[in-house]
Image (cartoon, rainbow, N blue to C red; front, side, top):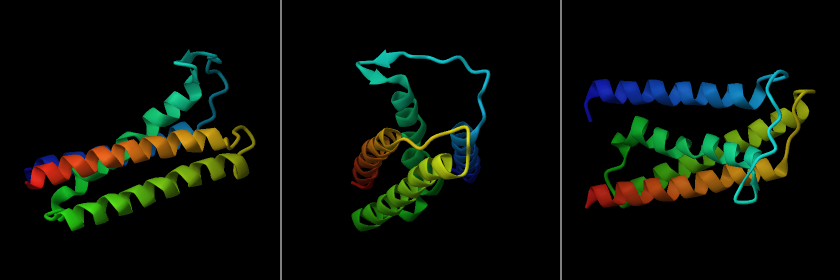
Length: 132
C-alpha cells in the first residue's frame, strides 16, 4: 500500500471515529422516531451494529503494516478489539451518565460487541490469508 493510501485510510479512520462520537452523543430532537424492525431486530440495534462494524476494518487498513506474522495479526486484532470494546462501553456509559438526553442501553452494547466480534474475525482471516 502506498504512503498516500495509508494517509488517506488514517484520515478516514479518524473521521469515522469523529462520526461515531457525533452519532452517539449528538442531540437529535428533530429527528423522526422510527419504529422499524429488520428481521425482528429493532432498527436502533441495527444502526449500532453498522456503526461499530467498520472499526476493526478501518483500523487494519490504517495500521496493517505491523502484521507480518500470524502472531502479530492476532495481537493487532486483539488490541483493536479491546480498543473497540472500550469505545463501545465508553459511549454507552457516557450516554447514561454524562447526558440527560440519551440513555445507556445494554442491548446497544450487545449490538456493538457483536459487530466488533464479526468484523475482528473477518480482519483476522483476511490478514492471515494475505500472509500466505
